[in-house]
Amino acid sequence: MTGRLPGPVSRRLRMLGVCYWLSLKTLAASAFDGIFQVVWPLFFATTAFLVFRQNGDPAALVYAGLGSAVMGTWSTIATTGSSAMQRERWMGTLELIVASPTRIAWVLTPVTTAMASLAMYSLVATLIWGRVLFGIEVVIASPLSFAVSLVATVLSIAMFGFLLAVSVVRYRSAWAFGNVLEYPGWLLCGFLVPIA
Image (cartoon, rainbow, N blue to C red):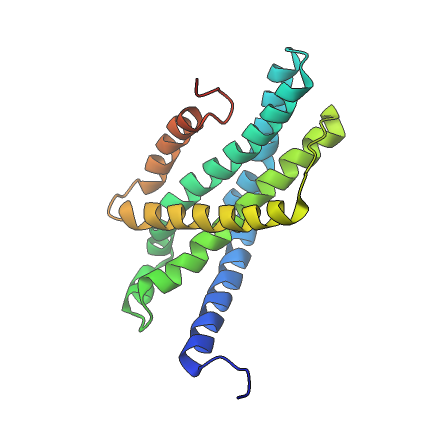
């Protein structure tokens, strides 16, 4: 027993890793996605902090920080996830992906996982932004549980992005559909507005 994975499993894992890395590089090189990832979460956070600071309650500022962090993550995956297949169509690679011997789900899952990974920047940037500019301290009681929950969040958001990408691929304005999903998601999930 050599301890190595069987051939098909190791090839599949390598393919997922390569697709993930290429998707990260593609998203990082995109001007729209780059600005969207860097500026938009900080805009959400600043607006939320300024509004909630009027209350004078430090717990409300922590709620605003976490809410705006998840709000930026939701906005990122709703917009980029809905336009993932459309972007492939514009670049002329959708036909190659569909015709490849690998199932489309195995190719699209790393793409949406890369989007969700970049969306996690929203969480980190918002919490650092709140700490540096507004003095908000979010205490993490269990770092290990927090790390596991971040991985679970990335995977669940990636799967939602995958579902969104394959659902709206038929529409020419799929990205607009993703934009429409932003606001109901903010309100229904209670990111900044209490559900009660």
